[in-house]
Image (tube, rainbow, N blue to C red; front, side, top):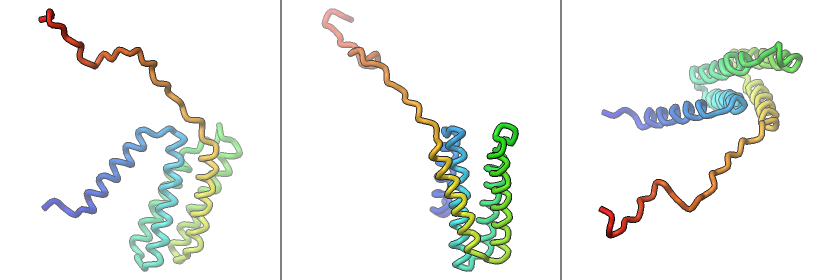
Length: 155
């Protein structure tokens, strides 16, 4: 009548991801892309071991999509210069390796790309901008939301 409990879990996970994306800084969004690709490859490796061919293909396709449409598309080669060009080449290499790993059922190739993504994610996290610290307003001893004490002569 209400569907599977898994569909409810998926809905809450989707809401959590969407909320995280809306609240994330541009730097955090890149970290989230790395994490998504790493998880997709991890899933593909597990599915490859279990002989789940169709699911493996979907997971690898998801990882390629994240790399191509997220990480690679976010590069600005004019501003990023040589670093952006090198990352573009690396992302292209990763996508090609993932395709070959899918075609040839090569778990080692999946592991290699997963390691590259993990190393990049770690480096990206290391250059994170410092968090913005918001100071709370000083307490005045008067809370405008608290009810006022009433006196007997007030009506």
